[in-house]
Image 1 (cartoon, rainbow, N blue to C red):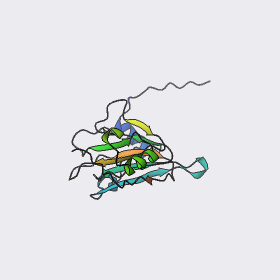
Image 2 (image 1 turned 30 degrees about the horizontal axis):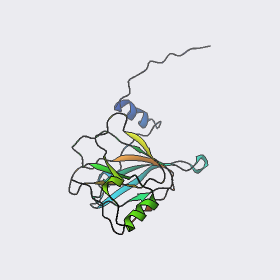
Image 3 (image 1 turned 135 degrees about the vertical axis):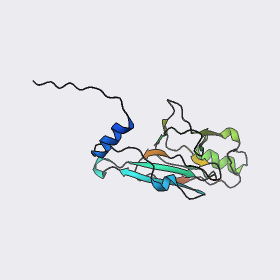
Image 4 (image 1 turned 90 degrees about the vertical axis):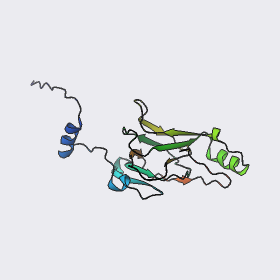
Amino acid sequence: MKRITLQPQPISKGLLEHLEDKGLIQMFRPTELTLNPPAGTNVGESLYESDEKYGPHKLIAVGINNHNVALGLHPDNEEFLLPYYDSSVKPVYLVISYLSEEEIRAKDRENSLSAEDFVCLSLYPAPRGAEMFTVLGGTVHCEVTKPGEGEIGCFFVTESRDLPLISVDLEKTMIDVEQ
């Protein structure tokens, strides 16, 4: 039997671009719209969707250019993939509630929500080991940035193709991120 011995090559952007040119891989790249979301908006655009016969799934690029906290949840999981960005891009904050949707709504009605019910993660720069994670279904969260101009640092999310976003509107509480 013939034996072929392969020499490992260090991974590099150039090598990945070569494989992409050959139609073998797809690199994670933000779209033009996610790099330039209109002020006051967050944009997510599909980069691919799996064939239905293999189960519905998609990868999206996400650009955040909204500073108003608008909580929501998905009924199923989503994975966050964070490229490395330094302080040259606008910060992205992931606001996560420690409470369930029902608990948040009840505490909002009682006017008893507090900062201790939330954590606000500054996503950039993400240290090694923290650049990929799953937000579990039912977790109340949202992504925001600071107001004003600046370069957008997009990130990527994988999730079920038809995953809905359920808004968790607060009647008595407004949440801000300190700038």
